[in-house]
Image (cartoon, rainbow, N blue to C red; front, side, top):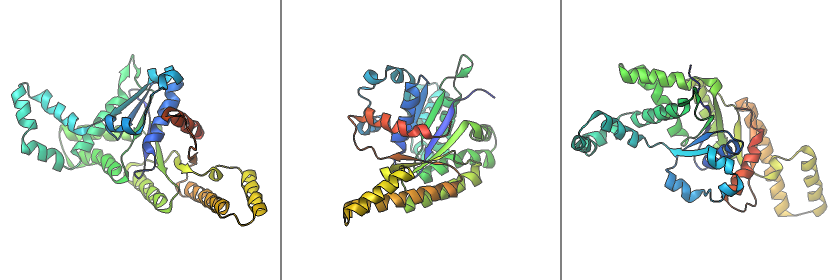
Length: 302
């Protein structure tokens, strides 16, 4: 089997910080001299509006040399297939502009997802002098439902089709079943609904694809959620001294709730839960990402 990148998949419901965490993880490894590609679920112009890497070169020239961020547009991949199979430009335009083609790529079940995974595989298995071109590939996966259907597409193409697409589906299934090279990192906030969705997603991934969580990431937690027992008791004592302080009392109860939920989630998933505190102050987005990267150092090795 050819060498391939070590892959980490940041998956879970939308709005929990998967994009930020995948970029932070990418920066951490790129700054350490490892070549990294982050596959974003957001088009790059949209991503640039939400996260700025201005100033990265001054802070970490090494990271600038080693960090690559891409967005895979399945529609563009399908257009490339048409261009590669029709040598005449006017024929290419006629096909791409036809309603039959446009309807096909929107309606055909799993077609766009299949081509997305094929390009993801190509990135992970790209070679440079006999070695994987990228040491790490971090996939900022789409929200839970779309993520599951994307993975299902490879299996469905292998199971229900014959010919070249079925063979390609089998190759994708082989790629995704290389469990030792893929770290599944369910990402969530410690809210009840998010936890339920995460557990359900992990059960489906195990049943359908034999994939289990390497670790879960609880994002945007309060400081008490990561404090040691001595820290918790110190806050409890301070609260007792100050008497009826509703703000401190609420923060304390919230912190205890998050600690309990983190422990419950770890037991349910059978995997460690790494907590990432909400960053309280950052000079810019690059500083924010490096602070988050520090919290991710406690993740199990990929």
